[in-house]
Image (tube, rainbow, N blue to C red):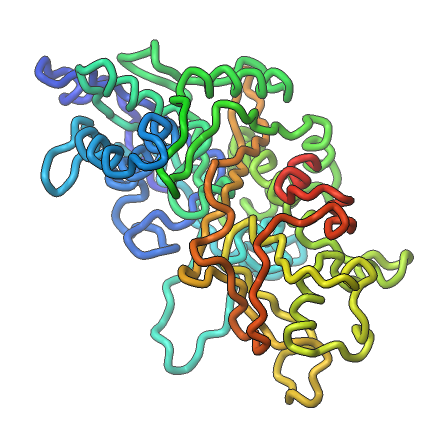
Length: 472
């Protein structure tokens, strides 16, 4: 872990009379940093935290808080206002940003578990396997270029020098972007799943604008605090088409404290014990209690999402590890489309007998790869399960999830789990397609009906994301 001296005084830029409202904000990351470099999913070899990345994050959260000002047809006007404030090829930004690294953190790609084995952080045996699946150790083909090691970085902290414009409207715009970034955003990749989540713990030279922290880490009080801050920082109105937006009217969901405590656990099976093993087994000799608490609060909603999305019928009540068929309709829908109902799957699940032509889990983001256990490497005539297929947009492969899951630090030292939604399209332009589907049957992107949603875990709830939020 490399370390530089913390700021003992304000930088020179903050002391210059000609620079408007310069101040310093101090951050610790309470979730791992994934990527953040110039190359996707790779850490920056020179700068762990880059000023250009911070500026890009603030631009996004400026849109999320201020886009309602411009209306559904106001994309051009919004872009002009964004360029005026944050800069473009035609003009300089009104906001200056400078990063000074305090702690570069510890990189962990593998760790030694309690039995002495080496485990990749993304592998199924890792406690953060579901969240870190892009880091899984896949076999490299002989003709491939050597891949850089895929790692997470834990324990990063840095200071951010930022200036505020003199114009009051522009100043308030930057303040709103800062609050939203610190509350719902982060650094690096997969920030909507909480990676790189921030804790702003100190502000110098502008104490009236933060740190913004809920006073107490109780779920109801945090929800009330978030409701008030959304009213304060989010402009009412409808964003230009396709622009993700925070809503003033939707209260983010905070995980119930007792459930998080049970998840953390005090025995060897609890997540806290397992995450400490990951950190110390990966070379992080003395992780702080705040970091461990942050990782528990970070991963709790991700684990709840895994359990929600992977609802299986157990083959026997005596052995809960013997997974059977999924309750969700997508596997049977793929069997319909590929005409592979064979073996123990010769009939669809009872809830799927009335075929819907729908893929409800698409609302959590695209693409989704459906890989069946017995559909790999077999001749077509011997297939028991369908071959691998990929659900994606018909015109654009990817669609970002509107669901944000992350930890949030509170002034009393506790860290809570927060889930919120961005008002954003849940279906890509042009609809959906299933890559590898020979049927050519169009995918129905309408919401499920109550009859179609009559399966676990929805139990008749037609809004898939809200059904998940009810589990937190």
